[in-house]
Image (cartoon, rainbow, N blue to C red):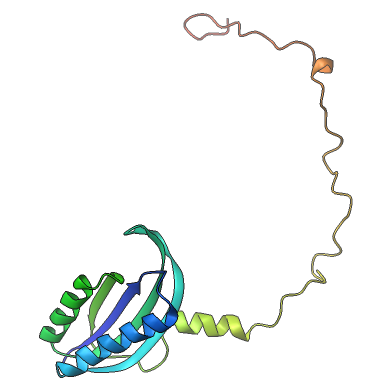
Length: 158
């Protein structure tokens, strides 16, 4: 059977438990039609690049699927019917990756970093006197009157 990577976005007001339940239903539907889900990743609540169906965020779910084309067609039909699914994307791939996806790797690399430094060693201490622009001039009287525009009707200054 061909391999597919399936990603779908669920409404932001759905709880993480509802997203997991929906992913379980999708997995059950795939198994019912003779396919198999080898990996499921919950990428969490993320901002969308643009508004979709009046939503600015969504819960992302990624699956590696080993199923026939008819199963994927039925899966897409169910995604279109389900009101909780904002968008979906199925891509046929040559082989499924066993390691975590790039989204999960980037999250792990962020967790490996140490705590943020507040001592500012690399930039030196913060200056308390931030008045590097000088005092503010509130009155415009010392500059004199504004110069009138002396251009001709054709735009020349001569």
